[in-house]
Length: 313
Image 1 (cartoon, rainbow, N blue to C red):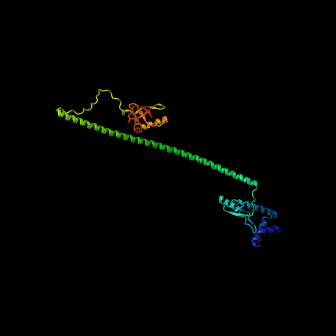
Image 2: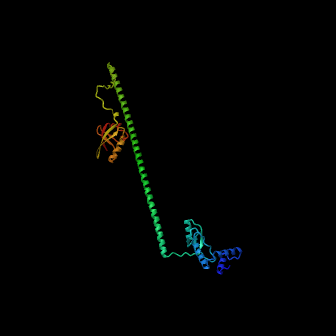
Image 3: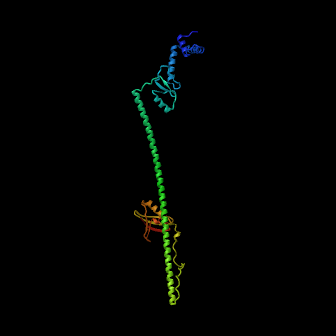
């Protein structure tokens, strides 16, 4: 059995050019495998396979032969080629690829048209990123503004509530002080009247004794009420509601309130209706002024039942 000389030389080259038993057996197997192909067909197939291996990311590039100079770097993980080590390092930082090898393939520089296209693509991507960031910033600003407004309103409501409570507390304290002051004055006045009456009776008794007359009797007790008198009116404690007529700068207003309603709550209701803050109320008959000191008292305690007419100031 004979083989073509060129094909036999190529078989020996494939087996490593070793004339030992195993290498010769490999060469014979290779000749049997490609017996129906010519040397030209085998050489063309090898060239195509080499090109495919160069661009195939799954095939590790062949090592440089003696005398060959690396023209580029290739990523063994994805097959992408780079002109410089800086580009390869940037690629590694972005993709976390770590398998790189040198390649003899020289990467041609970009043409002016390719540079222009690349620049336009970079500008487009940058604009898309800016637009996405801008929209996200606007949405975030809107959310922050809604949170701020809600927080501000809640804070204002809390402050208003605290202010009302403080005003009620202050009005109640002033009312209590005023009542205590009135009670103290009444006690002093009663004591003075009792002392005056005692001195008067003592003086009358001494005078009667000097002239030999009987001592004057003490003050007569207050007469008991009789059933023959006029029918008493309905007691104040029996009323549960009072009707109030207010004279305001914008006109007259009539409202009904429970008798336990404080004057402060009445003032707040009028402020909401008229839009102006109420400082005090004036009653013409009997003449009386109700200011912030009286705002903690109820309508029942102030005697504004079953009805009353007040001037709003």
